[in-house]
Length: 424
Image (cartoon, rainbow, N blue to C red; front, side, top):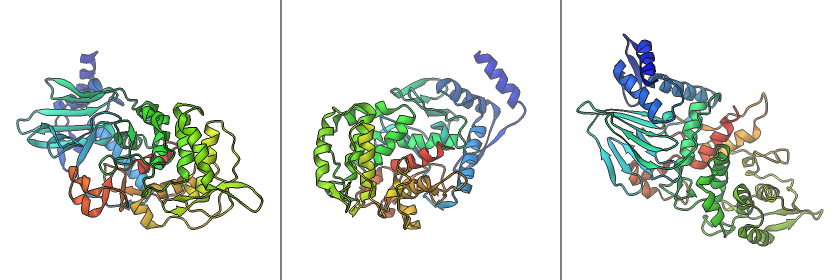
């Protein structure tokens, strides 16, 4: 079987070389190295198909080009040329400039004097050649993070993950990268917006991450964290108890448990402080979310959380304008008062807001396309100028990002893009 596949590649590739466009340079890769690399992808990872590296990368670039034609708002991002390994609860590692390091401690795991390096985000892979001509493949798959130098293979870390190919989807390769960006920031069982600059989960971000993990059958990665929840608020915005957190907690619990979970009773007790009544006596919620009143968004979340657990729902969504109403795109879309949408500055700094609006306002035959897309191959998502992000910790990635207040890769952004593109 192995020899048959080698013969097939030799027949397909004989008497020609491949011009492969990786960043940061164009190189020509000879047939034998192409066979080596493809076979590495085939036999040491759950490969998507029997494709050459050029075909794989071309497919990814074609998908990105198509995406940028549909969503023409592009943000220039710094060219860092790195790749993260360690999806889910695996050890977080970063490959950057010939070094594979622990992304949180800076410990050097392996080091090479690199002559050439190629990063393939959609294949979760880095291929490099050292000065002696030895090729090494680092690849993450459903089993773990594999290092293969052609002579020996070793898993640097092992744990089970489900990594779909999304075959048949218009943006399959982009979906793989977005899925990677969500899973990369699950750290020690906690769903973080970005493990470099945030140390605690944010419930708003975590619920969208959980929707992705549910869709890809990876909820086990955050199951223990959800089970451990006791406080109905994350209190991340300067200690404020935010009203939308209550419905988010209920929804998260519904994914792994039921209404007997201890935090449910605490939510039902805490919700009273936010209850309001309109002129008709109908109840709704009103409190602070991101330092402002968002009664529609908060009431939608509470209703959704209650219904997710099969609990009585006494609330009515108020008929008032709320800029956050459009962030809630998966239910109650008809209960919305039109008003001002998020501006271009929000799309540049907090792109998840505009991607959520695209999802909310899109209708068959009338799509919204205001979301912002990166001009780089990887990562595809980001957040900038956030008030509570610890940008100083980005020195573990690249110190230039600190001054820019820019964290490449952000899970709310990745989740919003993923969940919209998954429908294509």
